[in-house]
Image 1 (tube, one colour):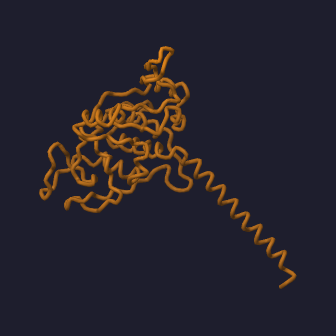
Image 2: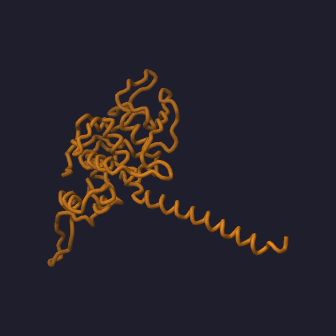
Image 3: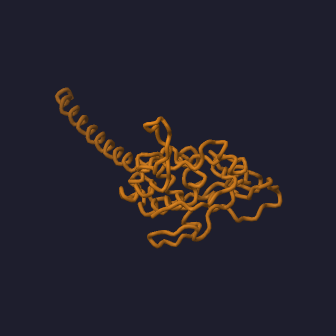
Amino acid sequence: MLGRLGIGFVGVAALVALPLVAATASEDGKPRKPTEQEWSFDGIFGKFDRAELQRGFNVFNRVCASCHSLEFLAYRHLIGIGLSAEEIKAIAAENDVVDGPDEFGDSFERPARPSDPYFQPFDNEQQARAANGGAFPPDLTLITKIRSGPDYVYALLTGYGEELPESLEPSPGTEYNPYFKSWTIAMPEPLFDDAVEYADGTAATAEQMSRDVSAFLAWAAEPELERRKQTGFVVVIFLIILAGLLYASKRKMWADLH
């Protein structure tokens, strides 16, 4: 069963200010443009890979969730990545939520239910900043929509380890990442080989985990993506047929006048 590993990040502002427009060079202090990746959900007929989504949730739940939240998702939404109702109930129950009032008017804690919002690691922004060296870990529910998509998240997570160019000077307490907008980032490298264990036997390399969690965050931003594509396709087919019928009717109605 998926659990949460207590891995905290210091200064996880990595995704707070993801650039809206990526430049092409990092040596001059501008972010490097992420390489375009191929995703199963790209294109009109693209679909999410449920196995990939479940691995991505595993990474998020065990690593990222110690600092980041998914404010706009409830546990029950995880049915969309292929988890069963029993699995979702067990995952939710790993965390306690404050409820109430009880018969005495007091608040109380209880295990989370599938209908509850996903676990929030901090009670408020001040607590989050205090635990992360002054940085505020952003909510990641819509991060791939409001920023540069899963390509950027993947590039950022795999962008550590390069040598800092001599022309650049790092800020105290930061690391060099050529994909971050200011090229120095407060979040240490979050993913390392075998940081999690995949139930399907997939090798948990840092690159694989980065790709999986990027796909999961793309799903979190738009769980209805597949349904929207299906609806759009049906609407287009309907409009084509309707246009054909209208054209045939017009030809028949006006045939005598020609």
